[in-house]
Length: 284
Image 1 (cartoon, rainbow, N blue to C red):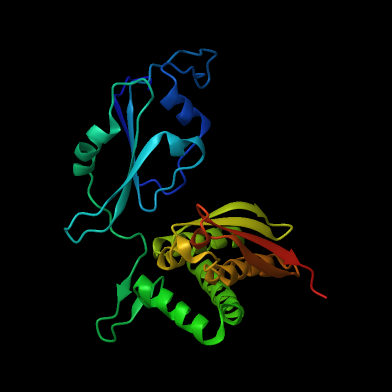
Image 2: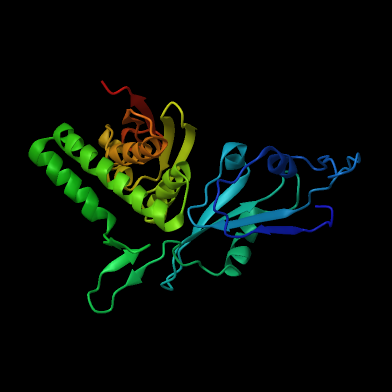
């Protein structure tokens, strides 16, 4: 801003985008900013176009009302990428008009999940962990079929235990591979789920000492597969997964407790996003 740049590009953003100063920059024609190491507080004109690119790009806070979020998906075989065009109010920039020009100059990113394929066996691996690549409808149809056979609550209980164990095993392995702290391992688990197409997962609150957390899933693969007219929660596969991630955190801290996670709002029931609450019950 001090240099008077007309275009600011934030490339490959991996964290949710927001913040007070960025919002001020986009809504005020001349915000004031204290200079680092000085007592000067100059006025900075903001006739600036801000663009941000990233996989599973997420806008938070007031930024959701100050940006145009688009997804590039050309018929070129390249992978999807989000672009946010952020324009200050009162400026002469038109995000809708300039969106095509900016998007045309951005190269589409490859998936952030590393994939290695054994040419002899055809086994896919990520971080040396065997993986299977499945279409979304397979998982959704499988869940619907099992619900029809044994009921949703019975399947929910079975899936909870298996997802809990799978998440715990994943966290143990990934922590060794990447040498992450327990909490960072949990966050890394959520990031990998997002990168693999399950939705946009976010840890919105965490109390490590109490073993509690709040999480959101936007664009859940299961909620999208069922549709908002379903009228009930369908993303319970995440409940055990989140509990398993917290179980690993507790395990590494040496703290006893039984993580319990429940979906409290689901997009398939008409909510704007899926929300989960995780607590830690005492062990008798």
